[in-house]
Length: 438
Length: 55
Image 1 (cartoon, each protein chain N blue to C red):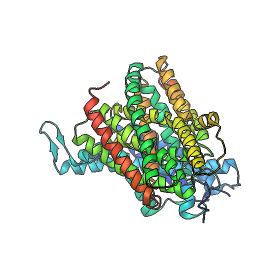
Image 2 (image 1 turned 90 degrees about the vertical axis):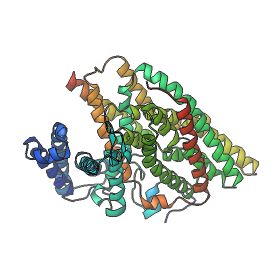
Image 3 (image 1 turned 135 degrees about the horizontal axis):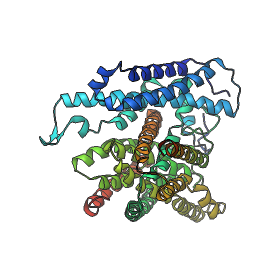
Image 4 (image 1 turned 45 degrees about the vertical axis):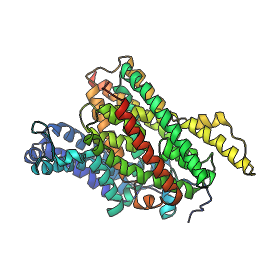
């Protein structure tokens, strides 16, 4: 199959970006920038528009006029179009839509807070570039449909998120990591093991199949879709059982991603409390980053840092949980009179270990040597902001109504009960036990 | 239609018929591990670029 579409769309997108960069650099859009309050972003807007505009024009010409043959080059080069498509949506949202929503919201007057520190509607609802990017992605895929020429590359969004998590390692100090690490191991240990156990218990009580119970336990207990996919082979889950689990996680995750920041602001949580809560209570890894950035979209990204430490700790539990489920499944099936092949536990741990977490640790180790000066940190933050904006907008493009409609029946009931319990209990624990900042 | 007894985990496949011959609905890469290594390479390149340009 040839993946590259002979379409001028990418070339046109590139020309639009170059013209945009030129207009900003030449000061022709000063009035617009002033209205939106984005004059400070002029440098970023020019640089990014020129760089990605040039890439899009060159690759777009190749896509449109070149001859394409099936193979690795065709497969990977065709994904550039989707990546530029996501980036274009993310740019429109970050530079124009989110500032416009903020302008409109301020014009409506404060809805909460004090005279000294008023809160506007967009603050209360967390309508910033992260939330709006995800919503724009969801609208794109569900209302307008992803264009054919961009389909392949839209699947690059998770790569953006993983790269962002690895790069996040540059922002931590040893003291921060030690303090947050202790807290996260205790909290995540209790909640991950507890929720996996609870799903298996309720699943056995409600008489769902062992494979369904196993894959749902991994998804609800550890880190969402990735965990469900990782656990599926060891519990011999069928595709419809995996689809049920993914549907449940998506429905629950999307609700949490929008609801958590609103609750966090309403309860006046600080960044450690909110990061700890999001990293524990939200089922899917990508949506932890989404909620953390929605809670604190700019500045030093402390909420994202705390949330991701909790998320990474949770991901580190994945091999243990997969191993637990493998042993559990063999015992249950054998007890029921079935025959199950023995499982090579060392191989399971090796295969399921998430390497990108090692990348995060490697980046942290590099930062700890003093290789990155304080002058470089704001640039890393800028990269992070864009990697997550790219990844989360692309994530929105993968949340289809069809996927969410797959949720239903017993998995939805069990997943929702355990998910709500996990979110509420972790909120109570965080409010009671987590104090101060790091 | 996809065989529901199979362990094919491509979500897109179950929704709208066979779509991608490679990777899955969530990633263009064959495995998560491969994607992890590519993400690590991307992060290292970005770190190197920042290091060289800002140093």
